[in-house]
Length: 452
Image (cartoon, rainbow, N blue to C red; front, side):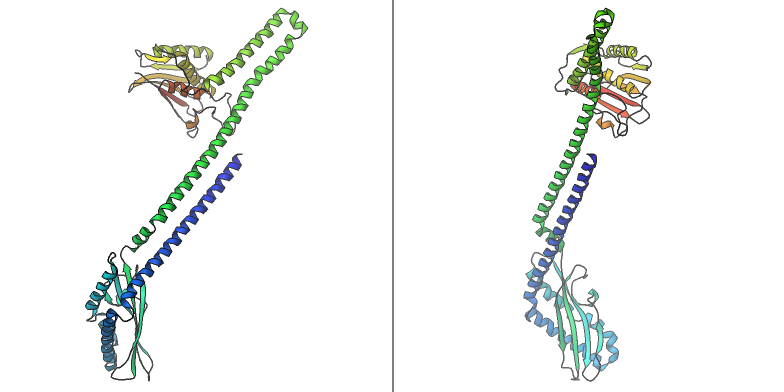
């Protein structure tokens, strides 16, 4: 059963992780699609103001042609000008006016977004029909090669269009110029715009994932609880069967003896066997009463309270306990001599006795009981030197039918109702019970009951 549940939990976890991975993949795919869609929108808008040699493009190309022709003419005249040409190209006199003009166009096309741009010079190649090609420079797009624009970096920018052109008409008719420029654009906070467009998808996705994880946790908890209930039920059946087996066997043997003629004729033996029957019958009745009464919840317990001095009641409990367990050393420290409380004498006596007997059951030889009054709470502390309780087991101590086990074995007999009964009785008095313990160092139970 345990192996089967572990397999189901592991399999369910793998399926949950797989579903989460699929969900993340779908969100990532949607994000990539939205990014491409956004870039297409930007390209389309910019195309409306830069395509087909509109007023902007015409002015740009006219000024670029004039600039390029002037630079090439200098290069034709003086080949040593090669080293200065690129610097003069990037520091051209049209930079500011062209930047301002395109800036105005972009502001009208994108009134709600802040758009930065740059036209990057990639290639500047001069060639003569009679000689080999003379490449002034040919580089991949770099922001430092910006001819004009206000873009500071290409990291978050995307390519809008390439300008590839040839220029001729130089004084020496054999020379021509091949250039390649590209327009890069960056929209400020474009990622926020994308996530804003995906808000509905994200909300639905996150909500569905939370629901899925919540249902998974609930299912796993229910599965573990079901296993726990099954184990407790099996354990309880085994315990109650064991507890009932001895008196029933004794009764069976006794009834057979009572039917024998020699026993009937011997009054002493007959009375002895009859006493055994009565004792075992009483034992059976006590077991049934224990199951019936000790399994009640604190809401179902009807207390018969009376005004008592708790120290006197505790002294009586300790005296009776010492008679039953004379080998157990008991130390007492009562610091609340004048206190009076409204208590149910019978139920509280049974609860305290259960704690004391539980200590003996788990190997203690010395018990210390002391009382104190703190923050209007009457506290009873019962400390033993038994085998102690592991911290992982302590939260389960007061659950119905739970018994501390060593490995997979229970080394002590019982129905697992004693400490549950203690907890319910103290709760019925509007109090609480806590345990502090460590393996090999005993346990300390502290019962707190309101003093007012």
